[in-house]
Image (cartoon, rainbow, N blue to C red; front, side, top):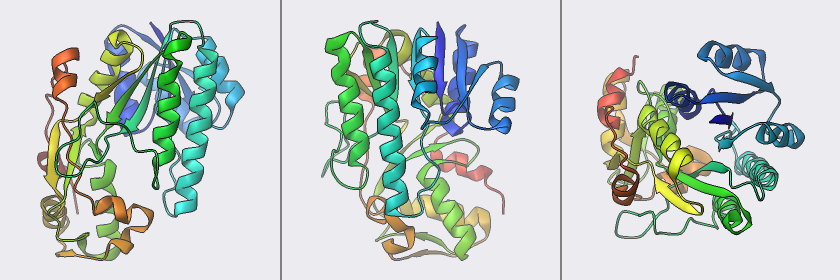
Length: 293
């Protein structure tokens, strides 16, 4: 299959591109810079120059493909306004890609996040949040899934709070960045709240499986660790960086503070059963041992 990929040089995207190529697919990947284009070419992908906001470029990429994986998202999470802009840009991109695929029965796999359910791990059957600071992502993915009735094999892979590789990435990566800036490996609340996690290379396998075989309108969970306690995550970060570990106000984490403070474990039981997905790479706490001071 010839696959158009956006976000192909990120933590998840670079693993997805490698997984697709290893699985016998060819890849056309969006690149917004010379550096990204060189990385993609070096990996074996074809390059389409443009940015996520270039909707005509996205439509052209989808038109040239037999399937699409949409991973690109803005890199600025510093304020609520910046996060909202990134979500709006992603929503417009998904709408444009979906519209290009109408009536074709071609697949498009979108990235989403595992939802929060009080008192238990969330499952694939739970609806995505459509309000709150990231509710716009849920609304745009829901709109894509509804295109099943219009001949689009849209599916969503929900990612956990941390997608990691060599100790980097996801919410744990943001904790690490904050620790380096402040000199304290901090966590909000009492730290008992749990975050699900997955290795990027395991997540990439699920994106390939969803692209190849998932039915239209379905949702899948890329969850390897059902829930690691945030204080345990912070403890490894602190030990590896040689920093003290302590509770800090959730406001220290900006717009992510309320999300960081939530207990949000997630299950992937149905994904494993139906698609045969089996994570094989190190869990989050083991992978964080790769951090260097």
